[in-house]
Image 1 (cartoon, rainbow, N blue to C red):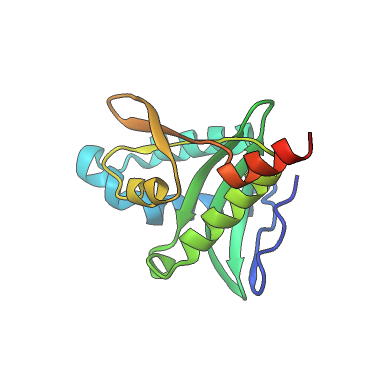
Image 2: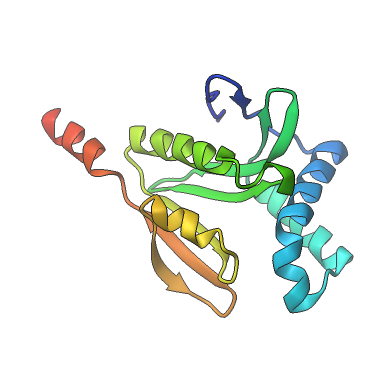
Length: 165
């Protein structure tokens, strides 16, 4: 699967299992998540790298590119009954500019077209949770570390589906 471009200037090249792509995605994770991980556990480079490589091999990763700038990564995976959204990391210089909201809305609209809910998880002390709440996600479970959220197909898509019947 490819993620369609977000006009006018955001594209989502698929990252391959190449060392350079794995390294880029790891640097995006370190930059975005380091401030939330280091205060709790410190940064264990070997552990974080191993975890990242495992995640990279389990699901598709995409670069987020705005114009010529590599702004971050995300994973977008269609499974049988939902869309899995994650590994959504923006480099700090691209945070709080509305890029994350645009990318999230774009991915949610794709999910709505597919008539599938979206599931994700995040570190519970990461302030990104407020972004997800603004876009209709609700908590469905919690662990000591993560919050697990789901966003149903929007009402507009449900109406469209019912009108087709």
